[in-house]
Length: 61
Image (tube, rainbow, N blue to C red; front, side, top):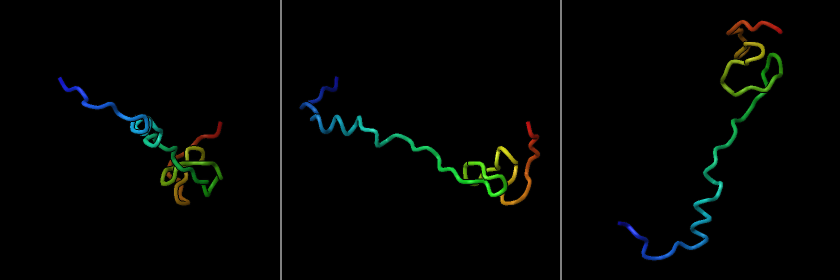
């Protein structure tokens, strides 16, 4: 059975448990057509436009 020869220091333990590995939230950009926030390089969910062209039809509620 593998057993550590020496105790890991608190600094080493805390470095391992730190939040540096947490994923970051995606950046958001404004839609040029409607001004809503959207993920870059994706079709806008509120108006259906991408790069100034209508890609999908979105019905207004």
